Image (tube, rainbow, N blue to C red; front, side, top):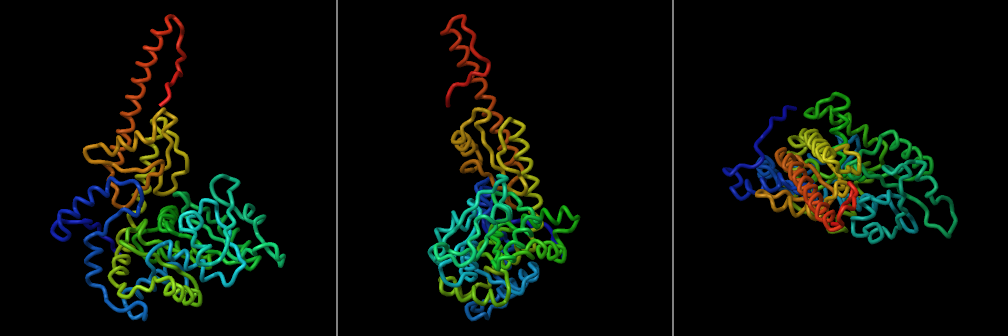
Length: 405
């Protein structure tokens, strides 16, 4: 599969307003959901079939589902509108009737960020686990939380949910396998929130010396990553930048059950072909760019670390979490300063996310801006210390004196 680099957005195809929007997006570090569809995606959508997906009569949607199922090494796939929907459909399809419970990491998206869907749709409770190693949960962390047997005072564990990546950190595959073995031992199902599993696959391809542009290489890696799971949700709008959509993979029986719930949830969209075609185009042309996003994330982290800023989580993929208080800077001030640049850079807090349309120049400007703020802060503290010294006469002022901010 040859994947040439294409211009993302041109005025001739998409208009100047969208060219300008791409410039803004290239300087947006809030999330990898902020990418915009490329000309190639929009043209692919234009050429898509326009059948009714509820009746399973759309060829473009069926082609995307078949492609993703094959890449994942699963029997079938189902296209839906969002990662939240595909996670909740998966959880609902696995669970039968209450009482039942789901074990997750305490930071898991399915627990914290999906509007209480597990309780709302499944009448299930979540049992959250704090990782003892501070990074990812382990089989040893999970086992004491299992509710097994027939004690009527407890809600039995029926499902384990993992997330990869979580805050940009890759879940070690050897630990995934141990958790899968634990689940099988007790007859439990294992689901993956793979919102950014494409990023994990890109890292794995690189580590194995394989080619991200070759479908067969991606299939080998993704199949290996998903083999321990009974089901997985693969977001299409985050890493690879589809305008909309996510996919579930699993057994044929599981996907048929999920399709039923998708209809009940109001997710039975009719003419999905253009959306599926745009996602299919992104999988071909945008997935190979992910390794570049990881390199830019490392560059940002190294630049900030070089200024003395604390990087608070491992930078395994495309996310950088930083704490500027280590050099006496305030996060709000950094947000406002970046926003006030002639071409604004947008962040919302300590999390910075690099995406396939992020500008390398924006990364450099980010680091340079924080460096200037550090320099200005140091000068201000020196001046304040001098003034304070004059007020206290000959009294020595400590070298590490810092005024509150």
